[in-house]
Image (cartoon, rainbow, N blue to C red; front, top):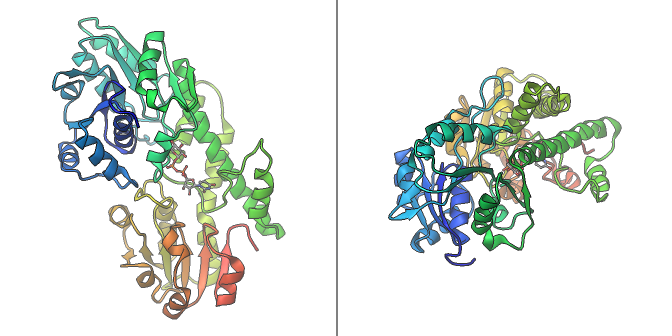
Length: 441
Ligand code: UDX
């Protein structure tokens, strides 16, 4: 990466999006101050400790702090004017949690917008990076205008992120595309400078609302692909076809493409479920009934219960039976438990009388906070001890490499329900497992 080729930036919010984006923008040569109102978090970061697990993040933060391009502060005021350096662009990456009705709670964005307005001293580009409904930038603009007592010029832009947890740094530094929604040439110039180190990647410059909508549409489309293949998997099961062959056959068509056609126990994580809800809600507000998105969600909810039904079929009575969960996180390489299918699956199995033993390589601490009445095992082998049935929930590499002769000695009954199609059906059956997977014979 180029050194100090960019500009002075302030990144508000040090969650997944803010922290990864801040560290990567520094790596790209910008001088970045990451701000969070959680003082504990800032103190941790200043000591080089990460509040989240993300592959390569600690090293990247450490490297850029040592190079004098990455700083941490606990106030927006300090972040926007840091040791004599004024931030030309201020990124907003604060939380937008879902409300009861599925709409996004934007109160943190409003609060931050007001503070930005109060601390501007010269032309500032305000960049929205959190996932937000279309027109949030308009609200930011209204809020900033209202509190901009000195009439400092500013522009509000949208620069949606498309990071996948676990490979977020790679995604940021090698993007499929960079999308910037800008209201003026001046703002476009500033954002092009911010991203100058990534000039070899396609940059799409649009109006602000289109950029906001690209994020919603992309995530909802990817969720639709997953629910579609999961529905197909159900048909495969009922007809004796193999969903992996069907997905391969579909994916070879360039118009469809092979990615996001992996059948499993449904999608989770903080983006897809939340964005899907928010997009449905937003469409409704605008007078359009986007029923397809509702169906995508319903298929996903049903798919989570696929594994529960399979356990029930094999166990007959669940009362007092032990089910081992290999994996808890919504996907590998993350400790994120938000909207993880494992949570709903465990709840339902417990309701039906089962006892759960669970193990995940990195998300145990987070899981302990949100999942109750479960035995958290020391490792995968401790997890399967005495199990009447094993459920593969997350396709971590270490589960692919298990010593199965050891597993077979530890379990009560050799039943494996593979929710992610991680294993080879023939091999598992030859070893002596009763093996069930998604949409495969
Ligand atoms: C997603 C988007 O990919 C990213 O662009 C966006 O900005 C944030 O949301 P992330 O939530 O980190 O990223 O996870 P992703 O790798 O996309 O997977 C989401 C979920 O879908 C996981 O639960 C995963 O197991 C599931 N999935 C994914 C499938 O079930 N099948 C697939 O083929 C792909």
